[in-house]
Amino acid sequence: MTQQAGGLQSRVAFATNRLRKAMAHRRVKAVTHLLTGTAATLGITLLSIALVARLVSPASYGIFAMIITLGQACERLLSFQSWQPLIRSGATIDMQTDRSSYFSLMKFGWLLDIGGSVTAWVVASALAIGSHFVMGVSIEHVGLTLLFLVSLLFNFNGVATAIFRLTDHYRTIARIQVANALFRLILVSGAYLAGAGLFELVVVWTISQISGSLANFIMAVRLLPSPGFRGLLRASSKGINDRFPNLWRFALGSNLSLTLWSSAQQVDTLIVGWLADPASAGLFHIAKRLSRVVQQIGSQVESVVYPDLSRLAAAGNKRAFFKVLIQTELLLAAFGAFCFLTILLAGGPLISLAIGSHFAGAVPLLTVQILAVTLTISGAASRAGLLALGDQRSVLRTVMACTAAFYCSVFILVPRVGAMGANIAHLLFGVIWLSGLALSLRSAIKQAPWAEVTKK
View (tube, rainbow, N blue to C red):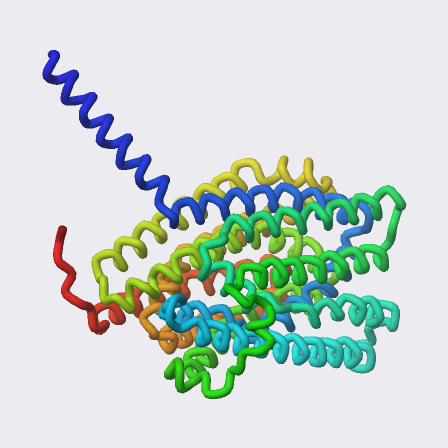
């Protein structure tokens, strides 16, 4: 008995030690910071949505949702998502010997952000003005849309995201998220107490959007090595493709896949409002807004493992590469399943308590949407793995198949079953996304030039 007890204590001590070491790992700490920040942001965001939903009717909320969605859609579709090529190339730079290349790379990303922001603002503004003449949208609503679209000009999040992730400052990302959510809640609370209308809510969202983007960029710039922001201003991106071969090809390929992805994820609210009605768009936006928090967690976890996977791929360490992939996929799948079961069992009371019974119609939409999001985030690590291996073409092919399936189904389903049709289209998107990435990654791992790693 004494030997058995001693053996059990030894196994417990061994397991505890392994768990302590795992929890102390930099990657686990980064994920913990992001999840904690996202959880806090979720709670604060729910309060903001609840106040907005109680201020206006479902139809007015639908108009508000379509205004915000137009800006977000154009930002995602037309702004250059520079963080992916910056992280992939930046992970290979030796900061001790080649700091100038780092500044040149960040300058390249910043210029992409500026050009994309201006392009997104111009196109979105033109669409808003054109909607008055083509679709008969009122001048008042066009004016509100143009007001919110000003926030697009301050979007430098690509280079900021790259700097944060390359320097492992995930705690800073979480703090900025929470601070901006709190700032928005304060503004929304003031508007609620004052009995504000649609105009004031759009102003609040515009101010908080601009402040969040600027805070993100300013805090990221503070993390630049000496000489800091002056080094970024003085750096030249001329000949950047010579320093980082295939940078432009990778950037264009990855950005095209993100554009296609975002088109399905962003314009869905506009499609529901167009083919159904503003009230349906409002309910759908509530469901999307809540499920997007789950999707953001998938994106954030991907952002943590992507630099690591890039380094492991560059080093040819197949065993560690595969281990990180499997662990991340299992973590995201388990988290998504937990969220789905929570909404399935308690979604009705939670929505009624947070937003009000007049938005109860969002519960079935949210349930199906969470299931779709669970499928998409379960493939986040596979996507990061393919990009780390330089196989953005496979990601692009998968996204093209998903997007085609989404659009072929959404325009058929929404006129027949309303907003739920868009959720079903997202579910189809998720199935194709997960299976396509899994097949592509399996092939990419087999073909990659791995180095022989000796077991220690």
